[in-house]
Every structure is written in structure tokens, then in C-alpha cells.
Image (cartoon, rainbow, N blue to C red):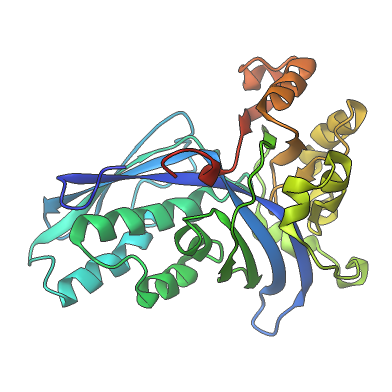
Length: 314
């Protein structure tokens, strides 16, 4: 990561998985009350911010996951994540009249896949711009502004040190957790299907809600593997399979090759599975015959990842 005071600042923008996603009910404001534990992965995008002359935030998209449905204008969440930083920088005299920020977003996280790509980009752009301009990234105004951009956005900023947190409310209330030491790794598979989060939540039924149960992320990293896999939970999976029939083929394929413990990421479309280490995860992909040519298997993405904070320099 390039440091403050440089001509530009580059920040990693990680994907995430939901180790547990409990839907507790619909709220009067139209959102759903959630209790979810999010984990940032070492697979993700990169955001570069640099100071420029001009009034408008500029955005350049690149990378294999810069698909047509990723906006290249002011509606991109990365741009929206920078806007409150610029307002704060101007108020503090750190950004002059006629100055703005240019962003370069290198995309590796597939869109509409339940991996939090857009939310992560918003938080990463916010962090990069804050470091570039000398603004405190932990200013409460920034996390509050990110919560208005998207429910998952504050997680990526507030819990960036450990990459692990329990998130409640609609997901915007973040309680960071320490990341347990572990060699465990994840296989993430994204089918050639895009999921609409509103459609999945609309398909969720109050009557099918499981009894809420406590969740301890220590189990995922330290319990015997089968116990850890059994602890993974996503209350939206049944609704996603109903509302997005294209998900059923991958679900059936996983069930048929010993991947019944794979869980849906967020509201989909990706599924993830837990393994003892990266070698075991890679072996599972090899058993599926996936050698990096995900498209040949009806997948937009297939990769092995570890927790982001488990890597040096997190």
C-alpha cells in the first residue's frame, strides 16, 4: 500500500464471505434486521487515488471483472465513497478550490455475486482518499456516510485491521473481532448467474425463519473441520434458490461431489466452502476439473482464498 504524502495511494479492496447470516425479520423501514459475521478475503480489487485539478471525481475501470454492469460514472460506489472525504477535506482546508481526486479501480471481484465488491470498493476508495488527503479515516462522519452508501460498506472500513466482524442492524453496525490464527482456506465459486439482492430478500419468508442461534467465529477456525463446516449458516439461501433458478445447477453439483457444506455468500450468487488449508482447497478444485478456466464450467469465477488479515502486510 502506498503511504500518505505520496502522489497516489493504493488500497486493497477485499471480497467477503458471510460465515453466518441470520435474518431476524422485516423492519418498519423496509429493510431486514440481520445478524451476520463477515470475513474479508485476500482475493479482491485494488483502488488507487490521486489528487487532480478539476471539480469532478474521475473514475477509470480496469481488470477482468470490470463487466458491463459495473458503472463507470458517478453512480459507482467507489465514487460515492470518496464524496464525503472530499467534503471533509475541504472543510479542513486540506483540498483547495478546483481540486478533486481521480480513482483507478482494478476489478477482480465479480459483480452481483454476494462477495461485497461494490461495498468494498466504496470503503477502499474512502480509505485511499482519506490517506491521500490527510483526513482521519476513522472519523465517525465517514463511516456514517458509508452506511448510507450501502449496508456492508462500514464493515470494510471499520474492521479493516482484522477483516472479521459481527454486523447487526441492516449490517451497518460493526463490531470488529480479532482474527483467530488458522491455516484454513476457502473455495469460492461464482456461477454465470447474477443475483438481485432485493429479489432475494423479497423471496425470504418470515414463516421459514430458523430459530436464531448464537454464532462464534472461533468455531470456524479452531473446531474440527466438520463441526466448523456445520456452523456456517445463511438464512437467505433457500430464498435465493427460489428466486434465482440458475443457482440450482451449482447447488446440485456441489451436493453431488461432497460439497453440501458449501454456503451461499450473502444474497448470492457465489458459494463458498471451508477447507483445512489452501492445499486441500486447491485439491477440491482439481477434483471438479477446474483449472482456472472457470467459464468452461459455467462459472464466472473460481478461486481459493484465505482471510485477508492472515497475509503479511494486511
